[in-house]
Image 1: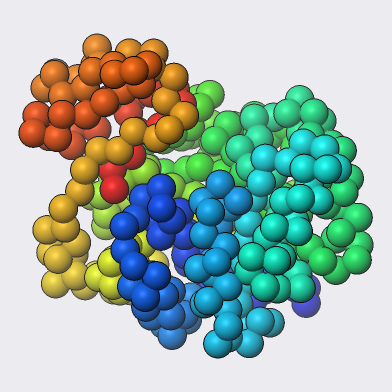
Image 2: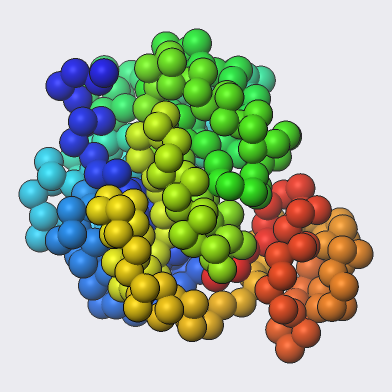
Length: 313
């Protein structure tokens, strides 16, 4: 469908490196590089990052010992005009020590209005695409309308939508509505890089069910997955690529310590506090705070968080 294209070369699994950023991980650089290289040696050649994740230097170290053309990097920024777009692209190129970016996306687009509001940046990125500095351009989104309102735009090659079995994190509707929007985008020949198949960790107790769901969506081209442990890489690779469930790895993953994490963009609305039957959440200094001794990781709180800022890591 994509002819002679990078889209024919990327792996089914895209390593989501948010899980290896300071936002979610306290692992050392050596430990993070081990995971990236371990995944690469299995055949995972696609890596997603973002300016927000502040881990370009990690990918720079990873790329040092790789043939650049055999690794595919996707990144994202909130650029809205030429100045911010130029700064974001220069930062990515310099800090990863690369001459080009395989996929550059506008981060967290909500629909056609936000896309138009960022169009000066879009125009700059498309100019860089014409020069070969960016190979493909796209958007990431948590919104159904973020998909369906841009499917006819020739500017967009890639759509990076949130989709998972329970519809966790979809900002403006149901899983079924998102499925239909993604199907439409695929029919328009957009490359679909899905995100959050485990719903920000909230489906982590049902990984087989959650990953089988996303694996069976034939309109998903690649699946971005955050992985912090070797066992997760093995389990995900075997299930999604080899159709094989590794029971020992599944058991090991289930034993890993997890905790609820509130993202910095929490607005302190208090809906999660009201939803929590364990009284494990409270508003502290304008943001939700967690009492880990009371939290049971039930994930009920995420059902009322409109900002998708509650994760299990």
